[in-house]
Length: 541
DNA sequence: AACCAGGAATGCT
DNA sequence: AGCATTCCTGGTT
Image (cartoon, rainbow, N blue to C red):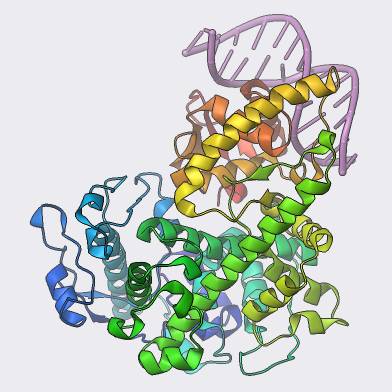
């Protein structure tokens, strides 16, 4: 576990035994030793097997990669990187080195390259390690890495834990000590892959401030659910962002040979797996997903199991998306004309919320653990998928989180999402006018699916997707919770769409925001600026 | 004109 | 009851 000096996490580490907070595998990469970073891209390629099978990205202007003595092997989350309001969302679409033809080399949408992204991560790794080392030397802050390395209470789900880590960190800060134990216990309670039918138990502690919890008391399963759904959201966000970076489909089965290669490279780099014998993975995605874990290991003795686990997460995420899309489609078919469900494509994907529901079921009813006691979370989710029940699924989803109270089409490629957003907006406009005609003087009845989310949660949801909504709303000072609505009309439209309120406008939306002043959810900014608002601290995190 | 601020009534869950 | 919506008046940029 990397404990950051001078951070809230550090102070918590002094209070909570790290093994209780997070099991070791969550924080530690399989190959945890810091390795020498290549100073140039050519070095990197050579370092990883001579270049022909590895990434060859022409660095802008022939520059070399900024030199860093070391970079840690810790997985870095692209979403957290993107959420920095100062940076343009990196959107690298299949540039030439990933196996495309020359005509595609100009398909870089934003001013960033895959290699630049990797280097930014590398730079951050370097700073992390440097800080760590400095504080180790000064011994002013206790670093608990050694202790953690010795304690490995649960080796299963290492990859999933890595994925959960960024969100967990967020909640460490948000909820201080208490939730750390909750998530840590929940993850610790995951049964190892080898142990089937092991019951999970999630220990909870009463939080110090219920206002942190969007869905009520975190001591309840529902409160935990709302938080865990965010964690799952993080997993999906990682998939989504990787799709954008690599320009691959979220469905691994659709990957081409080049897609497979790009994903392997990316994943091996992210997880610091070392050289991957790509020639042994010269196959399409459909073949790749059919490989067993043993085959992965045999083809890539170093990191094959990690790759398999990572791919398993992708596969499960995609299965969840498909199930969500099917459920949404089915719901649309049975709905009345007056109650047209809103199928949203521009909202965060909560595809793995069924996995979460599995956790929640466990906490709510330990008398029926069999539904969730399969050998691991992923298979648990697949188990749920095998029995698709739109009613139960939607009810579970609705209870999980305000972020997951909507349906999701989920069956589209990431590359076409933006187009669909625009199309949906047009549809929304048409639907709005027709709804007005339908309902006459009566205000439209909000869809139950979209009526539970709070405005402040919705705004944070938009803020968490700068790549999609950055032109409409963005952070000005994320730490202090200051954000600006750049396009008031669009934000109001999105809010109206979510709440199925076609008549929503910014005037009404801003009135709702102003209600938050009295409730302590938001506050007026120090310097009054138009369209600039600020979350109060607990809500800003 | 667009936005800000807040009171009041109303509807929904 | 709590929250959001709707409508309103008046002020500010």
